[in-house]
Length: 131
Image (cartoon, rainbow, N blue to C red; front, side, top):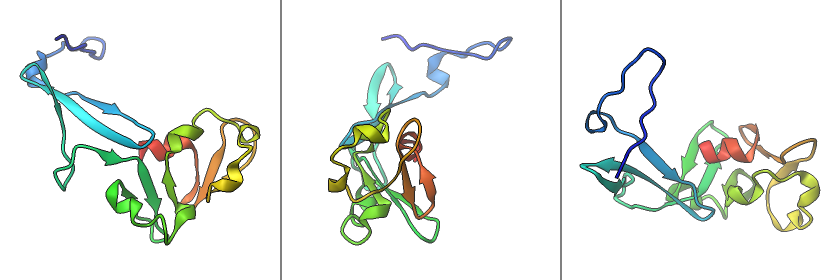
C-alpha cells in the first residue's frame, strides 16, 4: 500500500512511518476516520470506543457544538439546530429543495448553495460537515 506524501516547497518529506495522515469517510448517515499504521488501515475510535460516528451536528444556544451520538439526543428537543444528513444538501440551491417542508431546518434562500440558520448563525452544508 502506498501513501501519497505532499510537502511544502523546499521541505523534504519524512517516511510515512514518522507521520500520520487521516482519511475521513463523510457518509450521509454515519462517518468514520481512519489512518494507516504499520502499512494497514486502522479505523479510529471515538471517546466511547465506537467506530461509526453518526453524521449529526447540534448547535447549542450557549455556543457549544455537539457531534455524533450526543447530537442525536437533541433531535427531538431542538430539531432546528440539530442537523442530520447534511450531505444531501451539498451543492444544492434552494430551488432544488421542493420538499424542504418535511425538514425541520430554517433554510436561508439565496444565490448558490442553500444555507441553514442555526443558533450559531448561518451555516453552509460544507461548514456543518466540517464541524
